[in-house]
Length: 437
Image 1 (cartoon, rainbow, N blue to C red):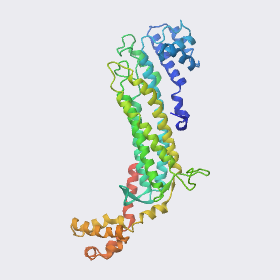
Image 2 (cartoon, helix red, strand yellow):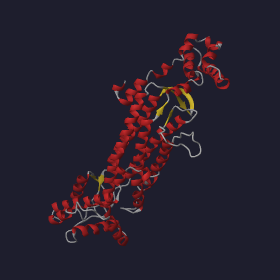
Image 3 (cartoon, rainbow, N blue to C red):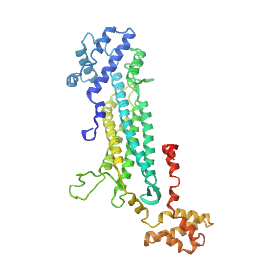
Image 4 (tube, helix red, strand yellow):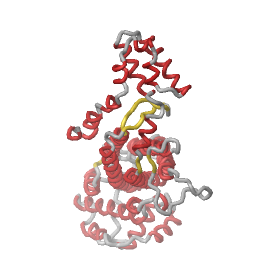
């Protein structure tokens, strides 16, 4: 993660100061539970809590780790320096390093999820507003990049809203998946620590106890979490790709807001490029980059190995910080997106009614023409539009085989654009609720 693509609220979760603060809370709550069980003196637990307002010296912890080659031991050594060696004698009683590391990591992921959820909420608000603004703004729908049939810009935004709403539900599920903690000892058997300690620590940290841990919390949970972030990133890219297409000079149905003083190219002063949506495409790739390593972390040796550790130290902050930035960039992009209804209509009419071919095909079959013959008649006239620039409606009206089955009035009726938008309100009700109809 680099400052260019980071927001302070999210980066603060992954700062060393935050990590050590979470470690301290886990250890202090564990001491409370141990004292309640009579395993350690109450006075020692209270002495640990007297350090709650202390500022942990990151440089000092790093210096100790340079000697010990063990981050948790380095932290505990520094904590003893603050609390006092005698008072800290029972800290970490019956625990193993992963009890602290895994529980803290999940606390960070849960907190990161809450921030990501706020980003998704902003994206959804932006998409909802633009969907209703352009509910009936006609544009051409495309398949394979080729004109298909009319749709509306509002439906495009509604489609993206529904996708991001699914993303929000998936994130909520992923958050619950990693909302577990483990204080179960060296191989997860609670041999040297009572399960009540785990229950107390988890309750205080906003987690639930992992049903069965080894030395670590099972990594299938984290695999699902990062896979979910990858899917959300792909949905961001889906929206960004549509915007990039719409901003192409030959299309120009919408474009990113171009601020006063903004420059598009160092060589060509006329350029207005879709830099934000292109940037979002790149950021999505970075978030997805975390998915495969997270999946590979699931298979650990026996009760634990360390192969997952270096991966998670990187993908935890990198994936959440990058996705958080991308969500807010996307929200701002949608909020300020400049839309050109006139260009949409111009593109829709570019091929002189050609996009009504299916209506004519269906009308011919309803009039008694076989589907094979109907397709042949419609395609024959459609190709004249493609190849000779003819007007589709005029060609149909001049085709005796077509007019033998359909009257001029029936042919004219097939070019009513309202036919294609008659169920927009039904779709909006499905997406936004019955009040949207």
